[in-house]
Image (cartoon, rainbow, N blue to C red; front, side, top):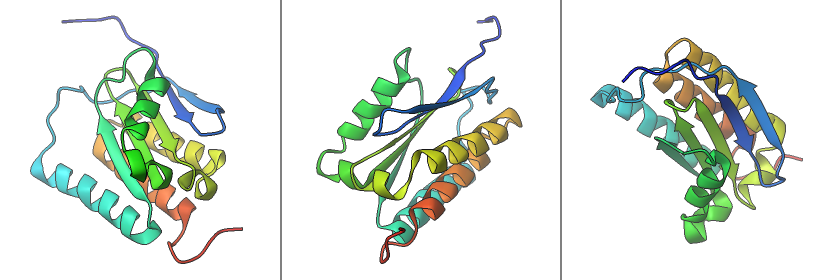
Length: 154
């Protein structure tokens, strides 16, 4: 099925309600399956981020639909008791959308600017058709912004 080029947006949805956007995201075909080594890289990045920060990093890759921010917030809310400490990175390559949703605790440690920089980094990698590398880099940047679990950033 061929379709006209879509000029999508990458948006950061934060608890404050502020939306940061980056446009013209190009990504790999969303139907491309991940190889075992790619899945391993993604899992390792999420595991390390969680271990370093004490926060729960989760990744959603797939269609988010026309209300991507609301969908990403639903994914975040579905984490229940873990939502406060959770960071959801939702990527829809086909729709060219990236959403980052933080909870009550994680939003104190990852501000809008930090989330925006991570999304911009991911978008830059996606433009080079490096979906996995972009996600790994973005998760790493978010974890660096959050800092270690045993101290608080002022």
